[in-house]
Structure formats: structure tokens, C-alpha cells
Image (cartoon, rainbow, N blue to C red; front, side, top):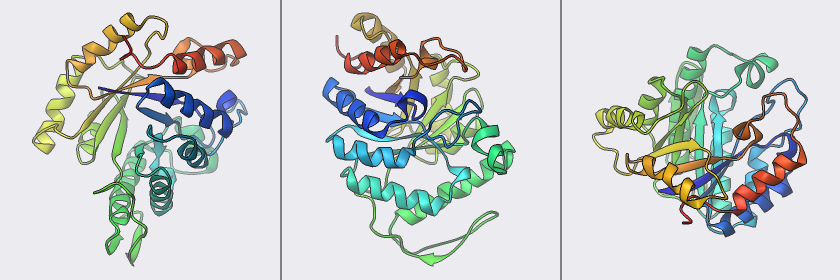
Length: 290
């Protein structure tokens, strides 16, 4: 099992230098991945927000080996060719360390509706599917064209290719227990369920893997990513939490590093004390340190 971090890029974390330094701390503490949220307008509380792709560029320069990426990019509100260009550039800059997380995005009323964009889930899902096909085609570095419901591309070649071969790993997120995102994820490199509606229990991963195996024939080489929170000051307790997921085949544990994971409500202010606690959790290292 590998261990990553999920970090917001707004409010007190809306500082690219801070995120780059935190990623360096994470690398030195032994974490395997540093993933930042991808929001353009999180809610109506006038929180400051930074662009995740510019932050990833700074993180790439400030680290050497930790994997990095977005978790998740709402592809339906992006031009997929622009995301392809950004992703290939970050992969080049980081020397092949990017993992691209994609999903429908939430909350829809702010990520989409506030800008007059489509909020209907089914329409966004179809746009996401087309965007993923375009991403893979462009990142291949081979001649590619596309005609779909939402996008039409003349034949073109996108260069340079990513460093990673055959391409940048793509993890698809979705709200468990919805099954649609699992079928979508099975076409790519990993599945990342969120727990907004229902926590993902170890036993749930058995069902998830059965669906993935029905589509791929095997889960070999496919990442299964669990989101959760462990105590940084009690390595034994932390390891006991992640061990139950390791035993059912989960390949990544992604630790939540936001005030929402530590009991704050949507509207509670982010006081310096909670930020210090989150930074210490990163510096304490992953649950594998026992």
C-alpha cells in the first residue's frame, strides 16, 4: 500500500508557496503522493482559491520523488485539450510523477452553475466520458481526431508526450455507492470513491473489485484508492486502520488534510490552531511508520 495526502487549495491553503513547502514536508516525511483539490469557486463564502495547475508546477520544482496531481479535476467544466496540455507539461516538469484524478466535480452549483454552465449530472457525465477519450488520444502523441456529442477535433498530433509510458495514470472519482463511476474507472487506471454519502468500508471493496474485474478481467495494475483520516500521534492505531483496507486489496490510502476531516462544518472559520494540526499530521508521516 502507498500513502498519499488530499489537500484543499482554498481558504488558508490558497498560497502556492505554502502548498509547495507542505509537499516538500510530505516527501521528507515519507508520503508517496501529494494531491490537491481542483476548485475554481468552492462556495459562496468568498474563500480565496488558487489555480491547482500553477500550484502543481511549484510543487514539481520543490520536490523530487513524491507523486502529485489533482484530486479531482472536474473535466466537464474544462476544455480537455487544455487539460491535456497542462497534464503533459506537469508530467514533463516533474519527470514523470503526475497522477491525474478526474470526476464530475462538486458542488455543482458553484463549480458549474455560478458560471452559467451545465449542472445536470447526466449531461456532465457524458461530457466527462468524451473528455477522457480526448485526453487519452491527445496524450498518446499520435495522430488523433474526434467527433462526439460535445467535442469535434480535427486530426492533430499533441507534442511533447508525457514522460510516463504509455501515459499519465488516470484515476476516476465518484460518489459511493453509485456504480456508474466504477464502470467508467475500469477503463482507466484507478478508482477513487468519495464518502460524501456513505463511507467506503473494507467489505465494499470486494464488491467494487468484482465490478472492475467484470470489465477488465483482473484488477492487476489497477489502483484502488481509499480516502480516510488516521491519527498522526498514534502510529499503531493509524496502521490498524489502514491494514484492514490493505487486506482487501486497496493499493493507496489517501489521508484527508482539511478542516472538514477534523470536525469543522462547512461554515466554521479555519483558525490557525487547526492549520497547525494539519501541518503536523503531514509532518508526522504516513500510517506505515510503526
